[in-house]
Image (tube, rainbow, N blue to C red):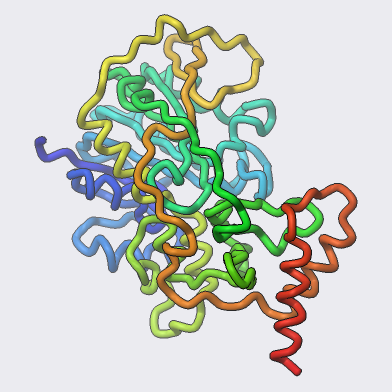
Length: 386
C-alpha cells in the first residue's frame, strides 16, 4: 500500500479518520467547526492541520479519500427533520463546491449519515446527494450497516455512501452479506433502552444498547439505561464505556472539557454524534481491496420509490442491491461483559418519572417482566434514599 491520504470534513472527534488510520491511511487535513470536537482533534491528531469551517476552505489538498460525516441534525428522526437543505445538514453542499474546483480529484468520496435520511421527505436527501454526485461525474453506491456486525454491543445503523469518478463503488460496499443472528434470551443478558422516551418508544435492544445519542444542544446528556441480568438492576453506562461502545479508547473525548473533568455533557454529545471506529476501519480495508461485483440481478429503482437498504447508480439510473446490514459478523462482545467501568444506578427520580410514563402509555408494548424490573429498581432506590 502506498501513502494514501485522507481529508476529513465534518470530522467530529475523528471516528472515520481513526478507523482509516487503523487501516493504514494518513490524514492530510481535518475540518470541524465545533470547539469541543476541535479540542479532541487537536489532542488526538496533533500533527494534522485543522480547519474550523468548511465554507472557508479554498481548495482541497491531494488525497486518496475525501470523507464527510456531515451533520445529521436535520435528517435524524430524533432531530429537527428540516431536511437536506436545513441549516446544519445543508452544509454538505460545500463539499460539492470544493469537488467542482480545478485540481480536486480524490479517488474516493465517503459520506456517512443516519438511515432516516432515506425516508425523510420521501428520500429527498439521498436524491439530492446522488444528483449532485452524478452532475460531477461520479458513480455511487450506499449501504446501511449495523455496528453490531463489527462486534460492538450497540445497535447503531448508519448509511455509508461511497462514490468515485474512476472506480466502481460497488466493489467496496457490497462484499459480504451476513444475516443478523437470532437474539439471545432477553432474561439472560443485559438489555439497553431509553428511559427518556416512555410514551414514544424504548429503543429496546437485546444484548446491546440502542443507538447512542448526542443529547441536547445545551449539553444535557442522553444516556441509555441498561437492565442488567441477574438482579435486573437498572443502570446507565459510564462515559468511558460509551466511548468504547463507539470503538474509541477510554477518555478519547476528555480534552473536550479541559480541566473540568466532572462536566460530561459535551463528551456525551460528541460520542453520540461520532462514527463507529470499527465500521470506518472495515471501510478502509475494503477500499484497499475491492472485489468485483456482479449487479446483473439488481433491479432498477422506480422514480419516487422508497430507497432500499443498499443501492447503486450512475448516469441518472439507480438500482436496488439485496444486501443485509451485516457485511461481516465479527466476534461479538456481550454487553454485560463489555462494560469495564462501574455503571451508575438510574436515579430514583428518573426511575419514578419513567415508570409513570410507561404506565400511562396505551400503545407501547413492553418485553416480559420489564415493568416489574423498573418497579423493583424504584423500590430499591427509595430504600437507599430512606
